Amino acid sequence: MDHFQELESLFASDGPLAKIIPGYLPRAAQVEMALHIAKTITKKQNLIAEAGTGTGKTIAYLLPAILSGKKVIISTGTKNLQDQLFNKDLPVIRKAVSMPFSAALLKGRNNYLCTFRLHNAMQSNFGFPIEDAAAITKIKQWSGTTKSGDIAEMPEVPESSPVWFHATSTVDNCLGQDCPDYADCFLVKARKQAQEAEIVIINHHLLCADWSIREIGFGELLPDAEVIIIDEAHQLADTASNFLGISLSGKHLNDLADDSLAEYFKDATDMPDLRSASENLQHGIKKLRLAFGMELKRGEWREIESSVKILASITTLQNQLTKLTDQLKLGSVKTKGLESCFKHSQELESRLQKIIQDDSGKWIRWYETHKNSFTFMLTPLDIAA
Ligand SMILES: Nc1ncnc2c1ncn2[C@@H]1O[C@H](COP(=O)(O)OP(=O)(O)OP(=O)(O)O)[C@@H](O)[C@H]1O
Ligand code: SF4
Ligand SMILES: [Mg+2]
Image (cartoon, rainbow, N blue to C red):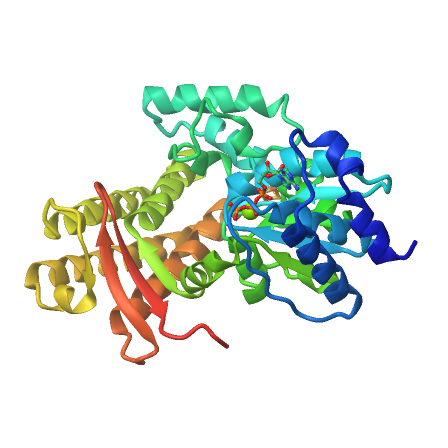
């Protein structure tokens, strides 16, 4: 039996899928799609396939992907779909095919517990509100039991909770190989597993991150892949536009101020100007939010330019950010933590500058207000390239 016949036989009415999936019936469209994918992989070509909802596209791409024996990256639209693919669909397929294969799930950096930052948050005398302190304690307990460090495993502290900021890392604040926890780092482990596995399940955001190599040290994943399958591909254009855009939000700035304050309380109480610069930035963010008025809205940058009040608040905020950068620069010789805050602050400063000054004609420049925050965005007009 050749490769294609073997694939087709898996879909038969008395085949292995029929034994495992309740109500299984062979579907011509599903088999056709699977065979097309198998041929495309063999011939190293590109294929775009479209089929209605419920056709069974997942199995139609998983089977040829696994039977190919190649290194395959599968990208899907959301983290939930990723979890479903890995925890529900793959185990079914594992039972149906006799061939063993290794698989790994990889999400973006901010989905993994950072034990180093968690430890720091617990050490610093930085006053967390009671409920945040309780959440941090829960995360600490969980950190001793989790194998993956994937924060989706911890429903008690929702992913949207701001405390995760203190228990996850960003490219800017991760110490990488200089980190004392590097050997046991969940993120490093997840990436290593992804590099070694035959089937790697990622999401579109990560796929875009890898393409643009914005996430340093991660760019080595895609070149290894022999096959890339993009499920929910209709969502990719939006993700790419967002990803290739430039954004700056009140939350980004607040996180920086929080981090700087935590560093101040931990290692730099001899720098009172660092504390006031961080607190001034927090005030500036609130003031700018208020300048937009209470109602939640989204609009073109022109609207901002026609409001004296908003423009003045942006200028104040920009000055406050510069002052904080200056303080962090002074502190950066003291500790790695202050150094990484300094780099982060510089990065936010340059992003804000880019957004404010843009007249390139390459971007759509817009803003959005949230309950306690705001976002400024540059979205590329054309992402085709
Ligand atoms: N041939 C089949 N007979 C019966 N059930 C099937 C068959 N193939 C797949 N299924 C089941 O159908 C359900 C839907 O499959 P799947 O999620 O792959 O659909 P889909 O084509 O990806 O749809 P969507 O576009 O909504 O993502 C799953 O529960 C799957 O186990
Ligand atoms: S290497 Fe980075 S992500 Fe890992 S524990 Fe250290 S700081 Fe956190
Ligand atoms: Mg699907």
